[in-house]
Image 1: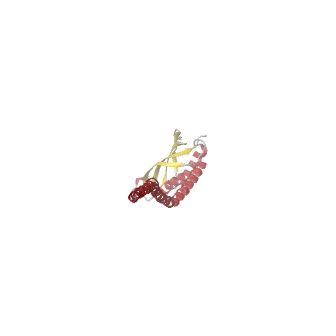
Image 2: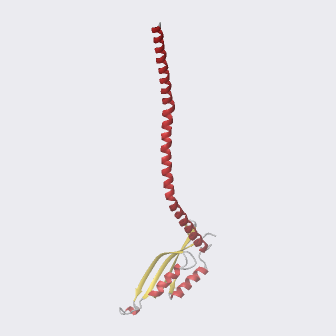
Image 3: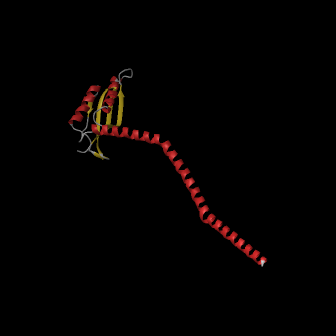
Length: 189
């Protein structure tokens, strides 16, 4: 009987060891391993987020500079739009153009009527042209005067042709013939 009790105890011990082993294996398989994998994924996600945050921190000065540049650009655009007339070039504009030519010393030979208005995005544009003559400095002052006029304009083309006084090759003061084509912009009324 003692042998049988010993055998029974051995079986109970083996069953207990098996149950404990199964319990530990189940805990490991269904508890610890998934938690380990999840923790490892969380650590990797944290590393990735920290790297992304570092990149964001390095971009902050660039973003701040870009915002300042945009604000400055918006201010320049607003200032330029404030200078834009609310309709097609009128007599005031043409008078100012004549004054610029006179002040620069250009003899205005022709100034055809403004071209037909064209839609240019949110603005309208009109092609203008002026032809005149004077000395070289007068032509340069005229170009500078056009660029400083109150109305917004874009210089499209300039044709300068110089002739010596009386055709002589030894003359020191050339006569400058100038043809300027520029576009002026306005807002729709």
